Length: 436
Image (cartoon, rainbow, N blue to C red; front, side, top):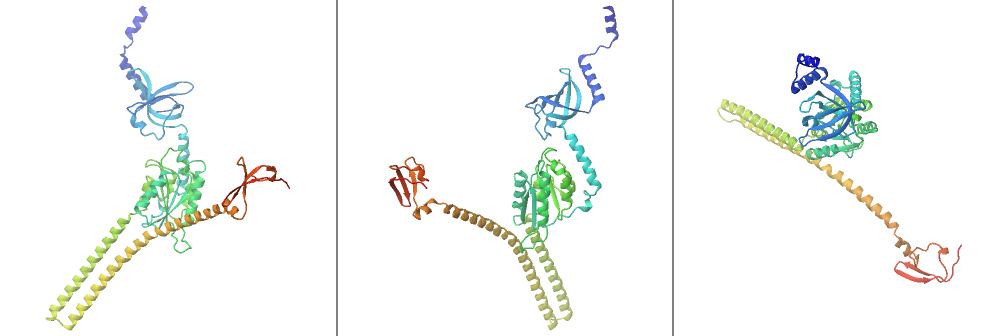
């Protein structure tokens, strides 16, 4: 007992809080920042937005806290049983004296391997020059045709089509649908791009419009969701494109190899559409500005010529035949300039009207094809009408039970049979029965 008291008197006496802080400092210096992998257990989200759970494996478990700011950056919803990889800072929760990991980021287990594959393939393709800025194509200022590659069920398709319809309803848009997620997505994306490449050439048929820009789009998601856009074959197919490609895949913070090889990257699908769709109102404003500049230049030219005429007149002392001829020439030049300005404005307005009218034939042909299909279906259905057979002298025989009489073997002498004709029914009785 005396030895124990003696040892206690020579050992530093810690206050509980101070010891907890000292342990926390030691953990911070030894481990932090730390990455941990394990299975989520007891996951809860408080009203404050903070999340609390445990990470466990066969050998132990660790209490974790993830505050609202970090939880708001997650691109998936954690659930009990999920295997995850987290990064954070190990410390001591002093009010309870518990070891605690404050999680700063979380991802599903296995993303680390995907990211390593991403970096390895990126370095390979970059070394081959596929991401070289010198090979990127210039975007067309006023595209005639726009191609879209995305999924038919994707929200990105609705966003892009809405933006294009609002801003440039006169431009022809061609959709090449493809899966944007899953094992077969890279192959379908390559096939969709190839089909649009063929349309990008000068069309042989009169009135057809070639594509001169392609939008490759889909919404955001996790690294696994967007993995199809890291496919090597897809990147090489994009690099062979004869026209510029704008990649609008994921959110602004998402990056795929398709973004690096594309001629232009857009932060969102809607932004991709806006990059190739200068609104018609802006174009009309530019035409108006050019018309104003032309009018101003014409007036300045006329003023200079008038000034020269005045100077010549003053030198002559009085109007002469020469001065009169110069006035006639000047007046003629002024009229020609005014006429040219009006014609230029008329031509530009006609071009815009023609572009808007191009949509009407397309809608009409679509409606006409639908009407033709409906009429053909109605004709085929009409040919199956049983009343047409009855009009040729045939009858439809039914037994008293309501079943159709299709064989002589079904009838018996004395049995009542109903015959349906084209204008009514006749009650019959079987006199005899013979079978072939």
